[in-house]
View 1 (cartoon, rainbow, N blue to C red):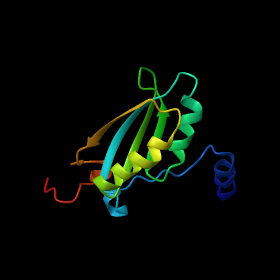
View 2: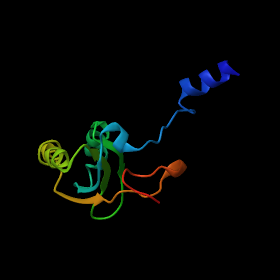
View 3: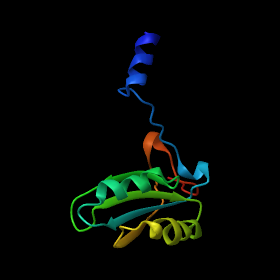
View 4: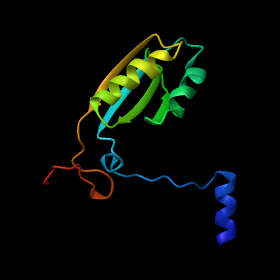
Length: 118
């Protein structure tokens, strides 16, 4: 059984995906980003945010905003610095929109954000 699990992990079919409260990792702020890049650029430009430590999830999407990223930072200032230094340094980005995600009251396995009493 262990050998089969090892084979599946080595082939990429089986992988571990851990879901935890970001605040426990010191990442209290979650922000969604929508970026607009030229139609020829989503794949190339999208790989950069996918490699950033602040980005938990990145994807190419359809519409006028063709890249999406879920960003976690320790503070609003940390997000601002990420946005004005790292994201603004991506040459193909034409525009960026962001939205702060409000604290989650209930998440996976009943996790609650600090300070909630539900």
